[in-house]
Image (cartoon, rainbow, N blue to C red; front, side, top):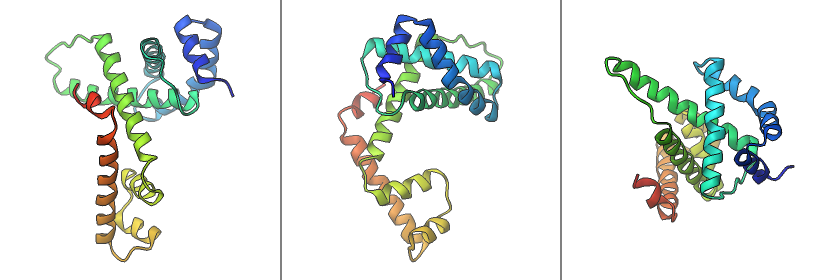
Amino acid sequence: MTDNSFFLKALIANDSKAIKDIYKANFFKVRSFIVKNRGQEQDAEDIFQKALLQLAVRYKKEKFIINTSFEAYLFTVCKNLWRRELNTNKIRVTNNDNLELKDDNEDIALAVLEQKRWELFTESLDLISENCKQILKLFFAKTAYAEIMERFNYNSETVVRQRVFKCKNSLKAIVRNDKRYKALTEL
């Protein structure tokens, strides 16, 4: 397995061979995701390029560490950027009388902020009990309470609701007690 910082350093150095390797290994998966989620190939190319730029800018500014594989991290960045793009397009369509000028620097900064928030969330999720982790993953996947009740052999959906509530509060407490939380919410 290659050191994740190798890819980040290659992006900063504009190493064309390494960047081609990143494209070969990752673009197909990103394109597939975006096309399946109301996008076109051009959208996938734009998002992939934005993700690489975002990673390079962020790594240049703060030498962060990727705790997963580079591929998984890049894919998550692309997914988050695409979801953000879909949400901003939804807003733009309702207000098509005004011409909006896009500021790429602001866009990158917001994307980096969202990625940092996502990292805090996923790291915090790893710190709660295994039971809570499983329950919240099902809850976030919009699994019906009845199904969660059956899976965990709880007596009623009320018990499931109480358990979800307690697990969400545990997760919130961990997030809020993290030293990064205040900086990520003040913006």
